[in-house]
Amino acid sequence: MKLKISSGILKNSNLLVPKSAKPVKAIVKQSAFNYLGEAIKNKMIIDLFAGSGNIGIEAISRGAKFTTFVEQDYSAYKTIQENLVNLNIEGKAEVIHQDVLKYLGSCESKYDLIFADPPYTNPSNHFLKTVYMVCKNNSILIYFNKTGKNPVVENMKILETRTFGDSGYSIYKYQNPSSK
Image (cartoon, rainbow, N blue to C red; front, side):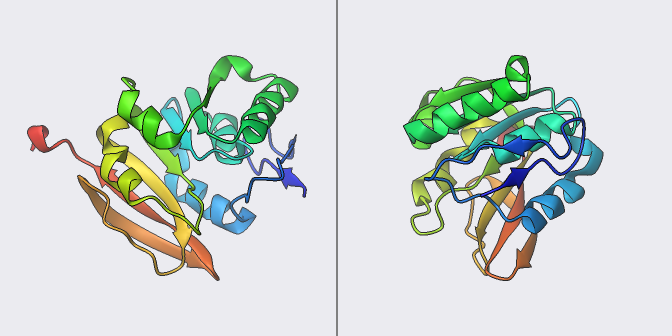
């Protein structure tokens, strides 16, 4: 499978894809990044269920300050590392080999933009209840999912949903309850 970065300083760069990954369709990725526009520049990003690193690397290409990738599958974890080295951007990222739920429970960092692409066949309800723990106030979550799925995400307000055939994404905004 061929996977390319669609825009930014790494445009048209090829990515390696592990067998275990099911990358977000190009049209879905393009739409999500078009929605974000310039809001991605100089932001701290986390790419959960990172797979090949496609989404987080696209964020770096478009001007993100730093991206943290979290991936449990060892082959995917190694592939992300290899993609970062091949693109000479390893200083703009870190790759965590850990279960996403365990990472969320122990993480002390906060992020401006959160990308999550959990397996469509087994999305985690617990993830939806804990993802806010890594959010700064007014953080945005882009949650890739099956069409028609708009789950409630703890402490977040849904802003929009976009669908493309059998896949799409929902956009949520976190507002710290103590800052209201």
